[in-house]
Image (tube, rainbow, N blue to C red; front, side):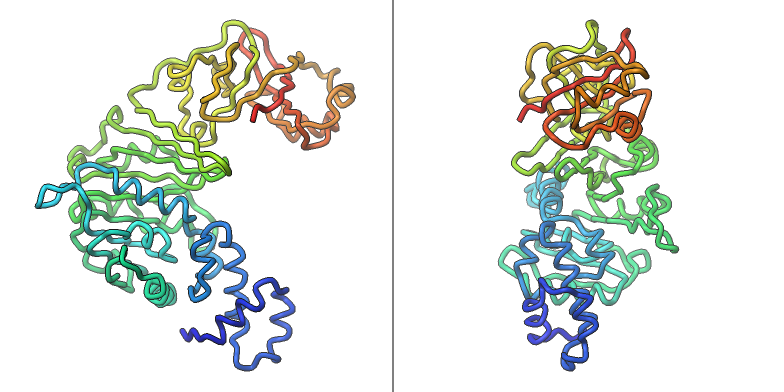
Length: 413
């Protein structure tokens, strides 16, 4: 890999250019590897909002399309660092609880590794892709500051290299099959963390694994040992990743004691952050509405929907769920700190097939969603002809003892 000031300046000068035209005009720039420069320009565009600190540094080399797509955002990388700082069971010989060593076994672009390694005395980046190793080595030298140690870059498949004894091992298994299709189950990812976990837990006090947001959490808890925490992380109401913390001292049993697992839900919104923590042992019966839909309607945050924390929400807040499988909640009094979106119900409309033809006159435009309803949101929009968007929200939902209802609402800011 050859990185020169000329290539860097070319990328900066053409960061807003049409990349197709740049490729067609490559002969005009004989001293520049234009395909490589175009790849960098396009990667930077994808990462501008995701990695603002890295984007602002012109000397950094960004990975290709797949690494840029799969890498963590700055926010979620910092969050992982917080998990390490707050975890227990990392007592050192001098009695302090600060972890001093980290090994990333699936380094990728190195984003998670860089933010997690801040303050560590020893940090090892491992990656089997030679190009990514060269890129990471370059970037770590550019980024180096007083908070980061001298990084050791190891090129090779982590399964075939000696596993170092460290405080923390981090893994982000690749979620693409050999044909390029996406996979979600742990056993289908590369490496297979289920098969490898025993060896990893012998070399670290804590193993932190990043999994797909589509992973089945119950399946994870059945197959991974020593799990003490599960973190579901979203950015702007889009679930991005599931993080599983395994602690070696808790991994003696083949099956983790589920009642000891804490679930942490966090959603980094544009101007706020939703945080919610509960224990799986806290789960009780869901409180169902005893009087239909009340004045306020609540939609749990996407992270809480992922972990199905419905009974926990009903126990913690004075809300009731509309029906067993209708994951919307209601109350007469406003619960301003509810972890999710809050709506004020303006009208309840009993659903009938005859209603579909006339509904557009009453509600010409709305944001439509359905929960445990007779129609999907797309089907409801198509049959009614209601235009998408606006300030009105229309929920199709099944309500206990009442049946299918259309709930016309306004969102509370």
